[in-house]
Length: 167
Length: 167
Image (tube, rainbow over all chains, first blue to last red; front, top):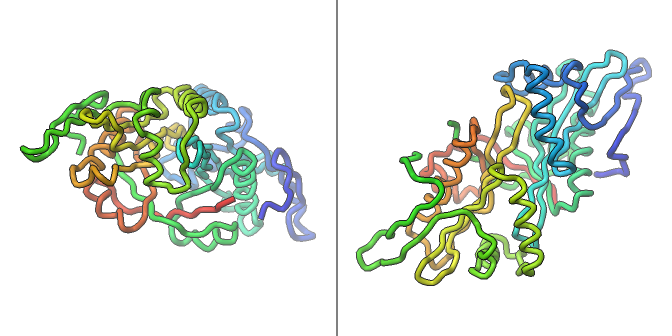
């Protein structure tokens, strides 16, 4: 599943001879607020409103302080300069399994206008590769049942149920 | 569900007049390695071996650096000085929902010899209260289906499925 992808940066012409879309998968940068990163997240969670530049920078700094224990990948469409896919992973450090680590994948979303190009799979592979390189013994995520087959294609298997308590 | 419990420390005589077990729910302390904390985790994950004092202290320091974004609660049996229940929560900071936060509950376990005293519920309530106080809009966890009813008693509802990829 990992396929020797360079985690840090990858540029690929996406399928279709007519399709000259060039995509770069890379870590989130502080300039990505202007490239539609938060707007893209609103396709995942409708309760997501725009963040002020100040709030964006503050959250960016919170997460940067975690170093490689937190990573957000984005795919930028080089033609338009817009962010068209993203996902995040954070590394949880445990006391069990000899001080094992677990990667938690969150907030994977592909722009509705950029579907059917395996962007989702590439985002998930990028995040899984990061978790593996960080020494995690597994990577996990929660999703709706209609995404089960997508994540199976990414190498995942269904394990448990997710319970939630909203405040 | 929160019931006004003091999150920091709670001492309670547990049910039954004959039962003079005194339990204190409190944050994990560095001295808890000697009180059976990691042994207790091995009841949850059989792949858990003992941690050297050095490794325990290193992991403790990793997590302490996260401040209130990571909390491990333990219940100590004051008669025996042993840890009989534990659970953890970490706070994930997101860009969506206006920079929302989500609490992730992990590694909840009650000593097999200390069951049927609502210790699990108290651990989960402690962790949920922490997440709520930290400003999370929800707290989530993954569990096997046989624990669904237990977490429903704790106020949770089933939402999604968990997918996993083992390395």
